[in-house]
Image 1 (cartoon, rainbow, N blue to C red):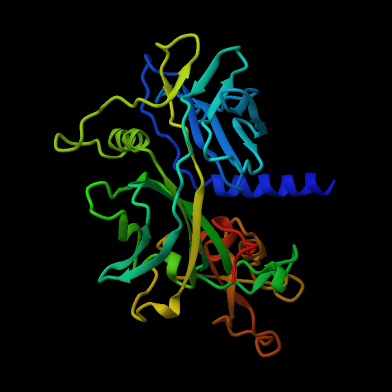
Image 2: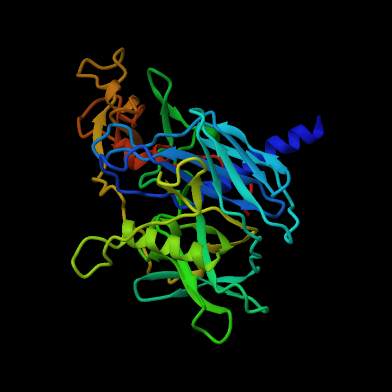
Length: 397
């Protein structure tokens, strides 16, 4: 029973880590729609192996994601099946750590629900060296996050990176009040909507080659740039970096993919090229399949950066261009014979109360009940949960 629980926890963690991978963005036409797309790698270490299957869709299609479900995926050697992956969500398949013998060759086999069979090329595992360190440089306009790494055996040369960012941020306005349906009352700590956490993942393909260097060494290789006005660094920021070793063929695949999906737009950009992977239909070699299955371990490292480590004149920009707070009167109807607007400030659809104020009207009860009105702000400017979560990540420190 315990092993089953551990396996479930490993899969849950693997899904989170798997979200760091850069999705394959393949421009499609009528001629190459519905192609099989295979994402992921065979992880030779103790981390889970995660493979995602999907189909390309037309740009004009209403559905942008088309997972390939109910497939059977196995990792195998030339003589035996090493592991069978389980579909944990639609189109995503995983297994617990394989801890493979790196002296053997492996491949991935996929059998789709329509009976077609696909395999990747057999290959010897590639060993990914550890990440030496992650650091950052402060520039005039922001923060440049970089990685240092090296391979003492001088045999890696080709690297790919993914990352997952997490940061703590605040709503533009602090709203200490909440509606009980009739009146505004003070929020409890559990009802706070001022401080939240947000995450983001790699948006581009990050590749590095040291093949032209005398040493297999990367010094301050740029990973991510954060503008000085970004709310990512207004309080505390963390980045979890993943480093994967590639073969030369895998590097060429990812480099072509990057050129075809990220660097097109003008006559001076790289022109479209074929994206040849290492996955094939076993019965129809003419069928295109998009993807490249690497066989390697994954190296990870995390760092934290706090606002106190950064220039004091860096001020986060308001992402929503929030307006100054508006005002609304709030008179209990039993006490006043003038218009009552309780719904305006007790409804989160309209706004959240920020602070009370005294009305300019001369009313005898002003001294006894000075909070006759409230300033309120728009929900997007006062509720951090609209774009984040209050739950602190398990790794946060």
